[in-house]
Amino acid sequence: MGALTLSNGFGRNVLSNPKKKLGIALVGLGNYATRQLAPALLETNSCELKGIVTGTPSKIAQWKKTYDLKDHQIYNYDNFDSIAKNDEIDIVYIVLPNNMHKEFTIRAFEAGKHVICEKPMAMNAEEAAEMILSGEKANRELFIGYRLHYEPHHRESIRLCREGAFGKIKFFEGGFGFRLGNPNQWRMKKAYGGGALMDVGIYVIQAARYTMGEEPIAVSAKEFKTDLVKFDEVDELITWQMEFPSGAVANCTTSFSASTNHFFVAAEKGFIRLSPAYTYGKISGFTKDTTFEFNQVNQQALHMDGISDYFLKGQPHLNVGGDEGLRDMKIIDAIFASVNQNGKRILI
Image 1 (cartoon, rainbow, N blue to C red):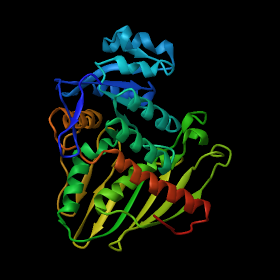
Image 2: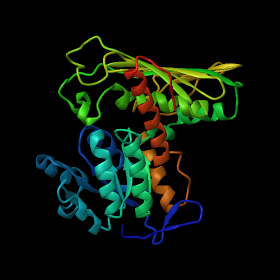
Image 3: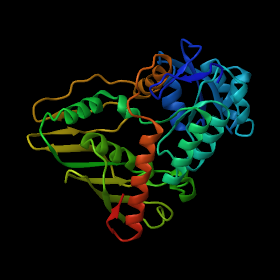
Image 4: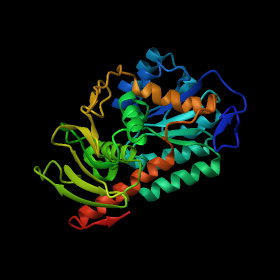
């Protein structure tokens, strides 16, 4: 990147030649980049869109017009590595199918850029570990697209759990799923890292971990299919249980054929419920004592600003680094291992 990064002594990289805003390049112009991330970059305070990478030339004209992009800010997958010469771009945001996360994260590091990678971080924990190592070798930072860490309902749920507002947590129950339409999209292809668990089940894993405040020690999982043709390659519905060192358990569900969107935390003296819990738009929640009354926010804008302020101002980010992504991948690997062994309890 144009401004060299130097360690500030606390494990964070700060810019030696600070900018007012960091430049972000979006790699992959699918639905999420087009409908969520790019519009969010019009609302951010600490970062802005400074490049796009696409394999679809027909998209370029509209993006140039909408976001005032110039020819030197447009890349494809073949000339991506030349992004190293563009000092306007500080962070590359990988918004590609899951099987491409590792390749383009490593290529971005080799080009001297920091990386935000969409979740799930990789195809498996082994790939995730390679990505982290690549960033360390390049002295560049890796972040994961965990937008909900910056969403106020989730922030408040985490605060209440950390402060023990309702005593010791005993049980978590959560689910995230929807009816997936087009059977030809990449999310339905095993080679691309498709399936419900990788796409939306990871949100439930996250919610259980950051409300419990501890890491699971074992998982047990089962997969169920009602449409063997449509879901020939990937998981349709998975239920799993995570065991935690405290003795608490989390019962979780994800699906590509049924709608569910919630979590429930039960503690000794009360509870927290969010429903809907994981959407881009309105999230609702309440406890045994009160109803949450937070305004709707642009989660993607807060997430990208939070990461940018980590560089620009030395402010800690909200636990959205590569290490967090690796922890999720280890759990996902264990869930798939349990499914493949008919629900066997797998130690993590």
